[in-house]
Length: 397
Ligand code: MG
Image (cartoon, rainbow, N blue to C red; front, side, top):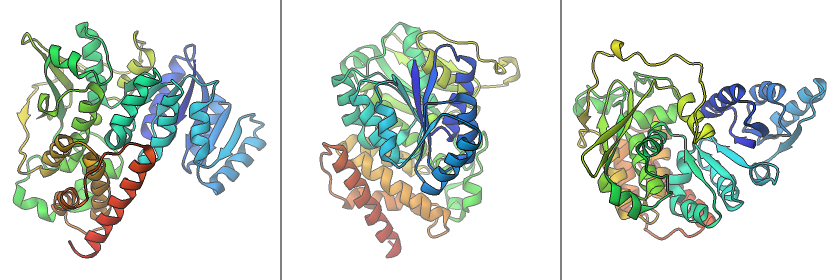
């Protein structure tokens, strides 16, 4: 099977290549893509020898071209966003890892779905912004979308283990069999801070995650719990389950990633070390598993596993995400875009940490709701919300 990795220099991209190097027999790399990190892309190209390497930044593409020429590599270097779709829809590639961070992943992912490719979906924005469109197209073109996000991948593993099938967005099926899906959250760096202290939180405090190191934006999303909010939206779209049946619990040990409560009262939980190679390898090897040579969890060293409800008054972003999925239409697109702009401005010290939910709420109240029926409309809507939010912040709200 030939695979294209969109965003091979991202954390998920790097982990995917690490898993793939162990299961080289099943997959051959067709294409690797990066925005501008040509140095890492070159290392990856040297090792995996893909047919194509795509870069978005022209200067980086030029440097990559020279490096490949000097090293006698046959990989063809392409430059520009349109080539992301070229390599994701190419007839020689049968599956795509969508690991680009941000909305740039939308178009090449949707195009690949329309060609019936198998999609390993790590990009959150695709589902949050254009979930209905993606699911509708996946059903129409018979494309299988497998989740990489650890909580959703845990649910996917639980469905498999319980004997239920994995059916994209099949509300009737899951509603009949499942009482509740529980996504766990570590609670981020401010889980113990009182609400009154959050106002003065600095960007460097917010990006210090207690359990792992991640990019700045997702770290702030973890601190506000918007990350979990986006994951509730993702789960509701992927499995077609009502938001009322998707719960979030604080689980500080980050060992249990998701729990399903079935209609008969049985609960199945997925436990593992928090290593992204685990969800990635399950998706790549499904329906079998591979031997991942990584340290396994020793439960005797885990003193306790605790679960608490979320203080929704403190973590308003989570409530806003539930509100957005309840409204439906383009509300998740508005939520996502307003959040991204608010987080950017917080990181630049232009707004307070506690302003983030206030800004998102204003955007949800003021940007008109509508049905987003095409990718072009979603992208336009996303751009308008970003402009609206920037303007709101400029006018000091
Ligand atoms: Mg996650």
